[in-house]
Image (cartoon, rainbow, N blue to C red; front, side, top):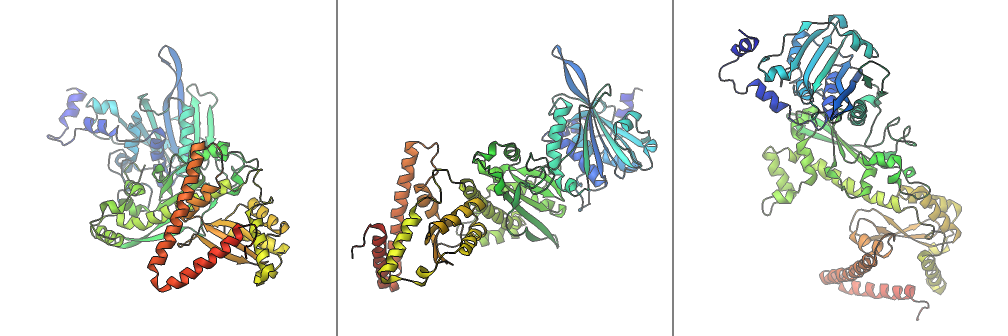
Length: 611
């Protein structure tokens, strides 16, 4: 009897899925690229308490289309983790099996990682694992050719087989316990990159981001090594550096000058923690945000996005979804891909594996589908007629819909992203052009003149008698930075100009809660601040339209700005008219207010008082 016939006789009659067909389907089960497949094996190493992982690529020249090209011949992933028993090794090579299927505390769990990621890239995967020195390693394998040829229907029983000498020599340090996973016999079309260096550079960027928390706190070190087949000098040998999309970590892969200092700063006072009731227990979901530091804007006013660190940030756009300290995905669905501002903020949502079903974590650990879909979620589109938001949330929660749990988190993230965009817009335009300096005459000086004229005409107030001192100047600079979030250099310039030009009035802007489109703030030193609310549509449609940062706008675009401002102004008066109509009890008082304000406006808008 042949080997094929012998293996065939061991098959079960009427099996649901023949192994050769199942493996063919699983090879196409969806790793985004080779780096993601390698990350799956690093997960296994971390789950096995490894502190050091080495990803080693061997490459050689192969004849391709009448020319010799470098091609990867083998990839080894070697760690110093706990190693596996023979029983565990066999389970680990089975699809959908493993020892962490009920483990809700680690980054593993789904039982698909080792075999699925391996055969998605290669046709043969071999595993050596040891718990008492590499000489005592146990060995098993999977081979796609043997499975498709109906020669292999079960994971071969692990057998004693020492770790090969050549892999001991390639490693920096083979320890008493550990595992080597070896990929060989590649289909060229399955590897995302044909060469070793390209594969490792892309892997560095990805795993440096995925495992940034492990690398940053010293729990994990990952070495990337590329060697020629003849075992000559390495063509690549580097540790994986932190790649933090929030740019809050030191000593990262970010280009200078932000390779040793954080490029971003935390957004808000502290992380936002949501305590989730699920499956009879409480689970914390942490949302943290960051935004660019002022130092990212070059002194010469050039585009920071064109700098090396700006290009680095452009590759890290998205919301980072983190499970058990390991990033699943950097989801771009929460961003506006057309807006260059998006590269200058970061958001991270971190949750425990106990909430996998709520977030919709896939078995390849590459995404959290339910949470990602919430980026474009519109509850009104799914609400019943006349149903309020709270009623909608209560209904879907009663139906067991996990989105009810995620809604408060999503609302918070959306609100904060809108706020940080506004702050970044101000940061970008905070550096005035040389033709638009704060120490030159502007409308603040004209308003100051009118304030003084009113005081001289017998309408003097206590503020008119106050003098603006050097201490008031320093307090103003601090207030502009801390309360209104002006850049430090701009705040200093405004405060100094206020002092030297003896201004009594300033026109400022600030993101504010509430419906008022401006506030009036009276400061020490007799200074009055008219503060426009940048959250109010009045600000964008009138204030910004009438003082644009003119760049490449066409004449038609500039005219459109003017028309928008004019329409907005008329709508403001219509809003006041409607307010008078509805406030019938104060009609006389509102009429008087309108008369008095009009009288004051006439004084401020004419060269001389008519009275």
